[in-house]
Structures are given as structure tokens and as C-alpha cells.
Amino acid sequence: MDLTPGEKAVLKQIRALYATEARREHQLKALMMQWPPIHHESYQRAYGGLLAKLLIQDVDAQVFRLTEAGLSAIGVALPKPRPLPVKA
Amino acid sequence: MAVRPLRVFIADDNRDMVMLLGILFRSEGMVVRSTTRGIEVRSAVAEFRPDAVLLDIAMPDRSGLEVALELIRDYGERCPVLIAITAHSSDVARRLTAKSGFRHHVAKPYDPDALLKLVASVEPHDWRSLSIRST
Image (cartoon, rainbow over all chains, first blue to last red; front, side):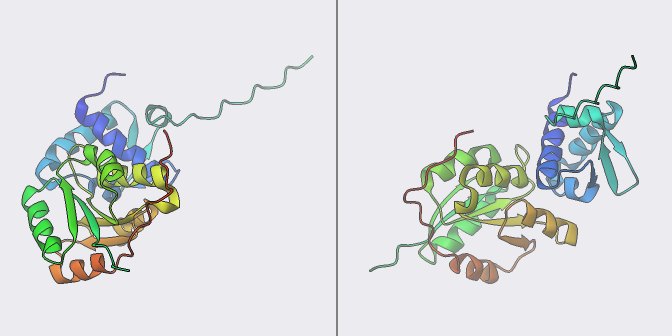
């Protein structure tokens, strides 16, 4: 998937959040505190790009959630579903 | 035995802040090195071997959280003392910096005297026999 430099930067910041707490949902506040105030709008746009590319989803105004594609993009390998037993 | 001067590394994309903190710490006899780029911190710390590392959380090229995680990965429990400098003082922010390996969280605007006191309280780091984990 093609990501802009800004989207890659925000994704790396999300990876840092995931490294501190390995869960899909994170506070937007925790992500935004990594954005320099003078570049806030650029990061906001990059965040919007990640939403549009379905790597993250808004849960509500304060929380976002990594999708499976998002987890994969930050290098988290999801466990493969176990194959269903084949009936004889 | 003479106590060696504290070695302090500062990373902040705001040049004025880096300069002011540098003047503040040098005035107390500390040895200071700094950068305005988060991406340079890891190699600079390996070379400079500081006792304390002050990291701005919101740096454009690499956030302070990312840098802290890299340093913790490199040095583990033997990491020099990490001090987060951030405009955010919420519980979320404090919890996050603590989980990222920061020993202290300093919210802007901060009192320079209090920051100086905090840094001066850092124990000299023992860099002998410390090898960096390869990644």
C-alpha cells in the first residue's frame, strides 16, 4: 500500500503506542501528543489519510482502533485462523 | 575520589530550547550535548554516553516516544535516565511516557530551577561493561 511520508510518520507513532500497550484501541490524545504544534495540521491530514486507507478506524472522538490492515502495516503478525476440522 | 560532571543529552526540535537548556546545565558544570533531530539521538547517545537524556516528545522526524523505545531496546535496564519534555500533562500522557521507559515526565512550561534540580539528582551512569544490543 502506498503511504505518504506523513502517513508513514503517524504509523510509526502508532507503532510506538502499540509497543507500550499491545492493544488495538488507543487514545487519540496519546497519538497527538507526539505531534509538534507547528506541524499539527500536517499530522492531522496524515491521520485522515490512514483513516481513508482503512488502517485505523475512529471508535469515538477520543479513541481510535487499529484495523487488521493497520496491525499488519505496523508489522504485527496476526495469528492465522485455525483450519476447521475436515469431516470424513 | 572526585565526582565527574554529569553528562546530559538534550533532544528538542526547538533550537532556542536546546540552547537555553544547554546554557542552564553548563552553568552548573554539566557536560552537555544536543540535537534538534530525533533520528540522531540513538547514535549520539551511544557515542556521548550521557547520564541523563532529555527528550522532547513532539519532534517532527521521530517522536520522543519512538526514541525512548529504541534506547530501552538498546540498553534495557541499563538505559541512562530518560526525561520526557512535553506540553501534555494529562494522566494519559504521564502513563504513556512511564510505559515508554521514561523515568520522569516534565510538562511545559516548566520551572528551569526545578528541571535543573531534577537533572542534578540523577546518579552518574555506569557505562563500563555495557554492550549495546544489536538490532
